[in-house]
Image (cartoon, rainbow over all chains, first blue to last red; front, side):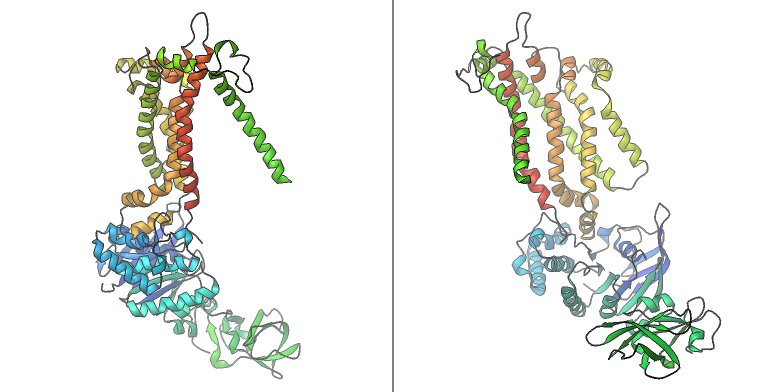
Length: 338
Length: 269
C-alpha cells in the first residue's frame, strides 16, 4: 500500500460538556512521515489522534486521508491502523486470530491472510506465540502483537497512542529503536502520541508540541531544541528542563519582563567571575553531575547546571555564554537572539 | 488462625443453607406417617411419594409448562435486554439516566398492584390460560432487571477493544458481535439464569392467569396439592425436590462458564 498523507484543516473538538479538547488547528503529515504529537497530559494530543482515527467526530474542520475527505467517515472506512496504550488485544482470541481479525472483517481471502500473518509474525519475532492468548503474554510480547495487528493490515497510515508507556524503561528504549527501524523499513506514514519528550526527540521526523488543545510549535527535533518558539516549548523539550531567568539578572538590555533561557549543560561553573551562586545540592548522574544552584542576587529563581565534575566549594561563579542564551519577550514568545 | 476461622464460618453458613434442603430430600423419601418426625439419617426408604407424583398427579405437565414459560421468557428477554443495555452503556445520547431510572421503576412495582389490570388486558387479548399469557407479563419484570444487570456489565468492559475492532475495519455492530458479546458471556449467563429462575419460581401471575391443570406451572400445581382434608406433605416435598432439579443443573453447568469468563478478561499487563 502506498503511504498516504493526513491533512487536518481547522479541526477542533469541543465535548458536549463544554470541555474544549482541541482548538481549531491545521496539521499535515506528509506521506511516509514519522510525526510525533507530544505534550503534557490533557493537552489534546490523544483526542487529536482519535479524531484522525475516526473514533471522535470533529466539532469543526476537515480531515483528509490520502487526499480524500474523511471528516465524517466512520473508523472502519478510513483504512488506518491504531496501536492503543492498553494494546486492546482481543482477550478471547489467540495471537493468530488477533492478527488476522482486521483482514477477516475486510473479507481478505484465507490464503493471503495466512501468508501475511506469517510474514508479520516473522518480522516481529512472535511466530512461537501465535497460538497463545493475550493473557499468557508478557508486556513486551503484547506490545509486539499489537504492532503486528496494525502491520498485517498494511494500512494507509499508523496511529500510535502511547504504545511504549506501559513498558519497562529498559524495554522501552529497545522498542523505540525497533519502531524507528520499522518506520524506515515500511516507509509508512506514522503519527505517534507521547507525553515523553525524550521519546519524541529520538523517534520523530517532526515534532508537534501541544498545550491546551493548541499546537505550539511543529518542526524537526533539533530545530525545536535549538530554537523553541516560547518558554513552554523551551521548558518542555530537553531534560533537565531549560533554566529561565529574568533578563536584567544577566545585565541584558531587554524590555521589562523579558526572560532568558539557558540549558543546564550550557551553564559554566568557574572559580572566579562576576555572578556568584551558592551550591544547594549535587546529583551524580554517572557521566556528569547536576548542580542545583541559587544565585546570590535576591529573588533569583533556582538554577540547574550540569558539570563534568562536582564543584569543590560551596560557592561558585557562573557564566552564561552569550551565544547559548535564548531570549523570550514578556509574553513568553521567542525574541531575536541577544 | 484466620484461615481456620474462615473455614468454621463458611462451614456454619453452608450447614445453615443445606440443612433445610437435606431435610426436604430425606422427608421426601420417608414413608408417610413419619414425615414430621424426620430422622437425621433416613431409616426407611420409599419412593412412594415420587411414584404418586408422576402416576397419580401427572406432575410432568406442570414441569413442562414451567420449562416452556421460563425458557421462552429467557429467550425473549435476554437478546432484547442485551441490545438495550449495550446502547445504554456505550452510545452517547440524551436522557440516558432518565431511561435507566424509568426502566428500574417499572420493575419496582409490586406485582399485586398490577395483577388486576393485567388480568383484564390478557382477557381482552384472549391470552388467559395460554403460554404467551404468562410469558408477556414475565417479560415486563425480567427484561428491565436484565437491562440493569447487563448495562453495568457492558460498562466495565474496556472501550478500547471495540474501538480497536472498529479501526480494524468492523462496523459498530460487527465489533459488538465479535468482541463485546464473547467478553460479556459471563454477564449474559448470569442475567439468563436470573431471568430463568424468576420465571420458574413465579407464583402470583401463574396462579392468576392460568385456569386449569393443563396450564398450571410448578409452584401453582404444588400449592393445589392440598385438599380439603389434608396436605400430602410427602408428595409436596417430593415435588419440591423435583422442581429444584432444573435450577441445580442450570447453575452447576453455567457456573463454570461464569467463573472462567471472569478470569479471561484481562488485557492489560
